[in-house]
Length: 370
Image (cartoon, rainbow, N blue to C red; front, side, top):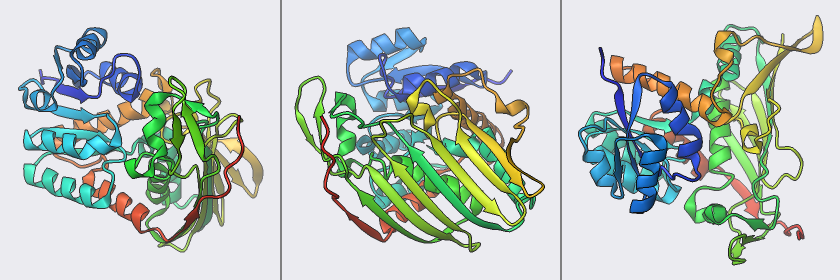
């Protein structure tokens, strides 16, 4: 019997956070993995996480977790500015790494991490999990098979409720500072651009407009003001290498129900990927929740659901479903030496694209909010 892959999670907050909502349920559902170790910055929270999640070991030091012999794969699920240091620590220990997107705060950091992973001879996987959504995989197969004919255009709209009130939780405060690389442009923008290229091919020309429409927030717990420097609106026009043109509008602070709709128009058929109805507003993001797939054809112009097959449903929470699919592919990669999960080189190219985008950006007069 093959020993399960031992996972150590950096950033396993026992009370909240992405690791608890997504990674822990995904690992628990997959026999190829076992949760070996957790780490937080405080001993009491690390021990609480070990007890709550059923891990064998608890640490407050990343190096101790990464060098432990029971740990084969280090998961980095902390604030973005800490990614580069913690990924480097894991690579120095010779361990495989699964790091949440964004991989780093700059393209320079990302390319250095990619080179370090290559030198270490390990797998460096980045969390661009929208590629593994069943609706995305089915749409990509239909496009590749010529079902749409020649793809002419694509339109993306995606909104989040983040920042739709003046008072925001303390744990989100750092995301409103653009220097931390964790705002709308980097997070949802990066996931969206990666998905567009995964479905339709490389982007060869891209211009964007960003805006800050809500210029101030306050920390709910303390009342401390937050000066916003990270954009809350992102609009882009793109031309892909195939000649397909695309438009993207991403919106933070939506007071209505957050939603995603992606339409792809071809000469023979159109597709639409839409966020499924959810009680969890975060799940409306294209990389997190379930997407439904629809098709419209000249002989059947109404939008008709496309079957996603047996792989379309998941019993996991919405945040964990696509993450579990990444882990499944990563298990195969580690067993067979393949590379089916997006690696640090993919992350570097995406960081570079975001950094090099010609921008017409600036602060639009902020909306007055109460």
